[in-house]
Length: 224
Length: 224
Image (tube, rainbow over all chains, first blue to last red; front, side, top):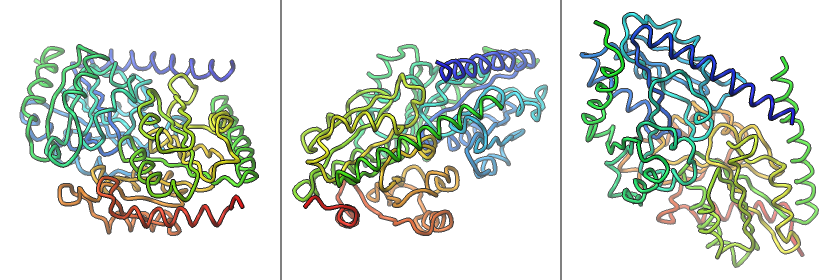
């Protein structure tokens, strides 16, 4: 039972730091979202589209989580108010961001000048479901080429999501993906989740997502 | 330092069981491959294509690893000599198969009547890189819609691969994927890896993959 105790302690410690992060962010009227998906489902593309649409209305910072490399941070650098890259390669848990990494990252973000932090988690449908970071909302992206069975095979991450995004809608004519079946699976696991169908490539559906997101930011905190 | 010690012990214990699995399989002249990828990159589709092409020449068993559900096992059931489903949902490591799970699964496979075991790992580019299972070869699938930067962002799993498959070649006209850049990344990380470009949907390139695989099986062990 030793091993299970250790895992339990890690999760508890993470929860404590996550609450502290959330309190700090809320105190500074900063809204944070945790964006999770498989590798290559479109987390960085969604962040880029969101920055393009909302950067004139909101001050947005980005935290990029990757096992290795800074390619995503470089992509968003010119559009975001601040960018912090976290590489998890040599950390005890490399398959997910954890609250302690966010605690350290937000020290490099000017919280009084930021309204929204977009946190891009490590590309993974399993580990990130276990660790809250101190975010206010959790978003999962599924992309059409991955297939419509992902909620059945990786239920935990979908159960806790506030919003589920179906990305790469532009590929619908070229892949087998049953949107109704996917929506039924989400409704079964998590009927309260908002579902957005969009394409970060063509921009289709991005406006609706951004309007929901800015509504969430306003509902939580306004700087003035 | 307590936590790191525990992780070290888990990896060492896994390594010991993996060697035992490999010895047992080799003794029975069974060749095993560990198939790894992101969720939805095409592991099950590759297994189905491989079964279709090779089942008349080789006796093939399949071990399906998933966090939850039996949908993949059901898909391959009619084509394989034996199928074992492993669900990792309530296990200490849910993000990868581990050697102990394989040790238990192969008890349900008639080793004397099987030439090849195709092991479908959990959909994940991070955790499976850490755990050997007792397989003879390791295969990683990358699919075009995931983007060509996966080797840079998830290097460990590509460094240890014997073969890298670029799947969903049929989507090339519809996605941004630089095949030359991807191949350069693999060559930099792991110049010995065999690279196959194929489409499990159209069947393009499958013959070459199956010919390599059956060559590996024959090189390792023959039943008579």
